[in-house]
Amino acid sequence: MKAAVCTAYGGPAAVRIVDVPDPKPAAGEVLVRIRATTVSSGDARIRGARFPAGFALPARLALGVRGPRKRILGTELAGVVEAIGADVTRYQPGDRVFAFPGIGMGCHAELKTVREDGALAPIPEGLSFEEAAAISFGGATALHFLRKVAAVQRGERVLINGASGAVGSAAVQLARHFGTQVTAVCSSANADLVRSLGAEYVIDYQTADFCAQGAKWDVILDTVGNTSLARCRPALAANGRLLLLAGSLGQVLAAPVQSLVSGLKVSGGPAPERAEDVRALAKLCADGVYRPVIDSRYPLERIAEAHARADSGRKVGSVVVTIP
Ligand SMILES: NC(=O)c1ccc[n+]([C@@H]2O[C@H](COP(=O)([O-])OP(=O)(O)OC[C@H]3O[C@@H](n4cnc5c(N)ncnc54)[C@H](OP(=O)(O)O)[C@@H]3O)[C@@H](O)[C@H]2O)c1
Image 1 (tube, rainbow, N blue to C red):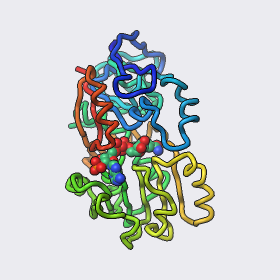
Image 2 (cartoon, rainbow, N blue to C red):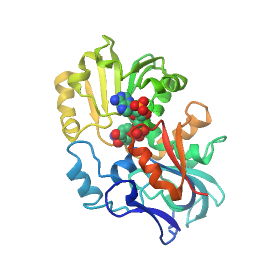
Image 3 (cartoon, rainbow, N blue to C red):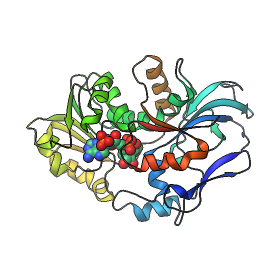
Image 4 (cartoon, protein in one colour):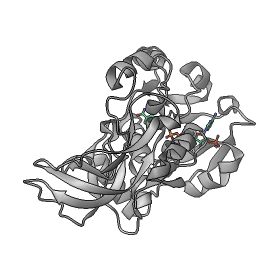
């Protein structure tokens, strides 16, 4: 099969299309013929070895010292079940599915095996392969931090910093669905989009500092990585939760102590890939509550351009890679 491989950390040109052996489904696994995937901010970070401050050493030790140990990047996919391994009961060849291997990677290829009891679900009615491929990276991250970490409640005020990205655009939709009042922080170019996704208020970060508005929020979800407890404290309500999705190692390590001392809840670190979250996202899409936003589309042979777009830090939703 064809796959995009990255053997050494570097710019977008570090990714090359090569032929690699086809994977075979083991017992309990399905083999998916991938029709669409994404180049997520996570893929771009790993390819370029651009990690939040303090994570460079631990990330290289975990992911590979000179290049990614998992040479085929790609955290999410949508496609058609091509074959099934022994004991698979829930899927059969021809089923349209999407999956979120996440840090397990391997989606920038024509074929990928996924455990049937893993983060895999049927594509909801009415969604294209391109949309289904873009459900999970932003959606599962937003779901984890809003529901599991912050336990947002109906009527609470939630601010999303970086509201137009893959995570932010999912977080706006989900926070609205959970009955919260959403404030989106983005550039003016994306104001209409985030309003259409459910934001009641929009703050343009190019002209205003959300921490200096005199307003307070119960939850601040930061996908940009330019906040801290010290900066956000005046903007957090008494029961405030600060979610640092792109926090530095120092911030992640300090979070439990900061929470204890401040009486607020400060959290960071990676969101896990849960089967239940992928199934919940499929239902939210089917119910019309959540629809992934697509920034742009590139065929697999132009995946380096997709990496360059993800590197820009300006994508609106997800950069999709299609595989005919
Ligand atoms: N902890 C976890 O488990 C986890 C999981 C997934 C992602 N992440 C991290 O979360 C971050 C966001 O991921 P993503 O995929 O959503 O990124 P993304 O799609 O690349 O986000 C880009 C968006 O950020 C906006 N932006 C840039 N600078 C901004 C600023 N100063 N203020 C407000 N918005 C700004 C841009 O809007 P404009 O063009 O309008 O500027 C753009 O729409 C990444 O650092 C990623 O590594 C963490």
